[in-house]
Amino acid sequence: MTCRTLKSRIRYRVSRSRQDVFLVRDFLDLSDRDQVGRVLRELIGEGRLIRIGQGLYARARRSSVSGRVIPVKDLPRLADEALRRLGLTPTPSSLERRYNRSETTQVPTGRYIGVRERVSRKIGYDGKYMTVERAA
Image (cartoon, rainbow, N blue to C red; front, side, top):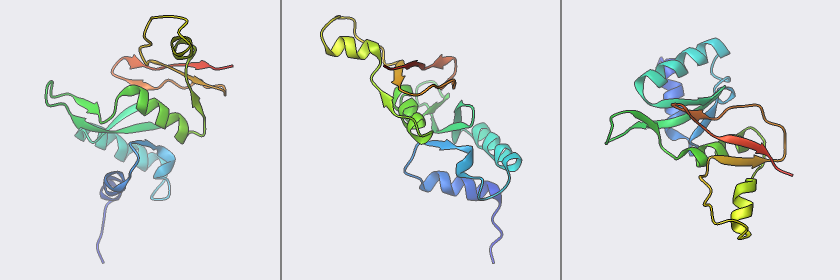
C-alpha cells in the first residue's frame, strides 16, 4: 500500500485536470478545508498554482522572460472559466457590445466581463483585476 500525502494527491489532480481554474471545493473530498488550504498555499509557493480570487486558483508556470510565476492563460479567459465554474454565465460587456455594433472605434481591453447575475467577487492577480459588470 502506498502512502501518498495530501500534497501529492492534490498535485496529481491538478496535473491530470483539463481545467485551468480550480476551486477549493474541488479538493474537499480529499481532506478538510484547513488542510486543503495549507497545501494550496504550498503549491502557490512552488509556483504550480496562482491565486486569482477568494477560493479560486489557476494553473501557473514560470515566465521565460521575467522568471515570475504567471497563469497559463490570459486573465480574460481565466475569468470566463472561473465564472463558469462558479455557475455563472459570462456575456460580452457593454464595451464589447458597442464595439461589435460599430457604435465606437475604441477597441475593448478585455478587462471587462458581463454577467447576468450579481457578483461581488474579484478575479485577478498581481494587481490586475477583471471588472465584472451586470449585463442587462
